[in-house]
Image (tube, rainbow, N blue to C red; front, side):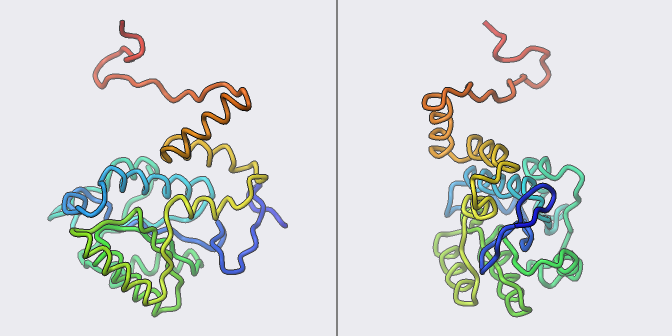
Length: 238
């Protein structure tokens, strides 16, 4: 296998690789999350962070897009913007991002044909561009655990619709592991494990346990938390 940027080039054969994927994060904004009720909203934020950080680790292009930021939806979540500090989201008025020439052109510029797509809400901001992107010859992988809708029925119907159109349902974790593919690829191993330990619940705790109890590695140290407006760390208080 040849290597790109120090990373082994993976065989494709129908799978996602860092070299054939583009990630689109659609309308991850406060007002859209307020109206989401079918999944736990903090979990939706967390799963989008898994996908976002994984895209950075594997150097996968990411397209951010927002709708009616000033008039209705608010700014993109700061947690997501922090992963892409220098990147401005593509602002739209259309509910369907595939109706926006800037969005479609951004995807075309990547030269990638496999779109890993997430957004709020599933019934509109996910389903509509998914159906049209497939019509235009793209493969769409909907990261379902990163999406949400106003009701469970709305979300379920949207997922049925996109699957019937040819989309593949995935999760944030499954995408990251598909990009990693082989634990012998050490160039990304540590970064993937850091995401797992930070965001992946029981899986992450299991990894930490195996590292420290079985392999006798030192425990993971996360940055100490400083109280905003204070010069003192919480851990320093007695």
